[in-house]
Length: 124
Image 1 (cartoon, rainbow, N blue to C red):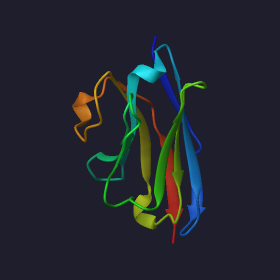
Image 2 (image 1 turned 90 degrees about the vertical axis):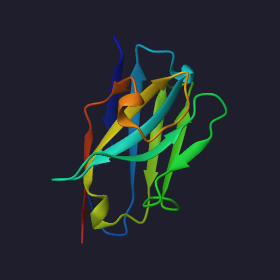
Image 3 (image 1 turned 45 degrees about the vertical axis):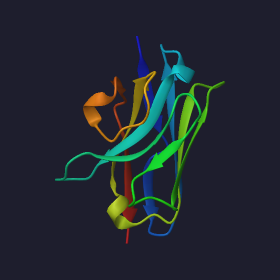
């Protein structure tokens, strides 16, 4: 049974930082492209960032480029998202996603597994 469990969300002031983690189990982690989506209240879920399963290329949404950094530790089956210079508009539920043996995409339905999400709230 595949599980993606996010952690690290919380309340932070604008300009602050948070690091999200996604612990994966039940899958061959290094065979999966991993990523993050987010959904703000009343808005559509949107792509944030992804890291390819093979060469580790990364892809960022323009809104987070230069502020967020994705990384993965295949030995620990864990995905990370370092979020710096947070803005109120980053407030959302952040979801960890996994896609088997294919590259990153912004298309939500292309991802095979989703976590339950972790809330990030940035106060102004």
